[in-house]
Image 1 (cartoon, one colour):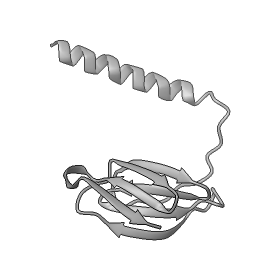
Image 2 (tube, rainbow, N blue to C red):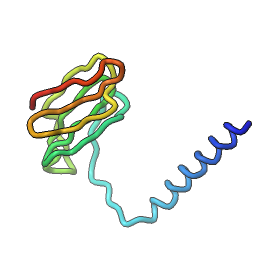
Image 3 (cartoon, rainbow, N blue to C red):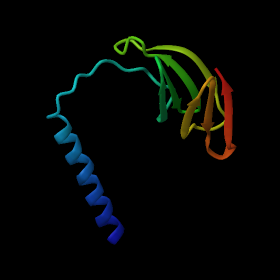
Length: 103
C-alpha cells in the first residue's frame, strides 16, 4: 500500500510538471525518428549521439529543425549512457559492459 501511495505521488508530480511546462516560453524545433526507446543522449558540437533501442546513432543537429542521421551501429543490448571524449564515444550498454567507439 505504501508503494502504491508513493507511485501515485510521483505520477501526480510528473503530470504537474507537464502542465507547468506548457506555460514556459518554449518552441518545438524538430525530432528524429527512433529505433526504439531513447535512453541515452549526449551532444558534442553539431552532433547528437543517441542510444535508441539497441542502436547507437549519430545525428547531425547543425540544423535543429532537420536532424540527419549520419551513422548507426547495432549494439547487443540497449545503451544506457553515452559519453564523448575527443574522437571516442564510451557507451554503457546494459549487461555487456562498456563499448568504446572511434568516431
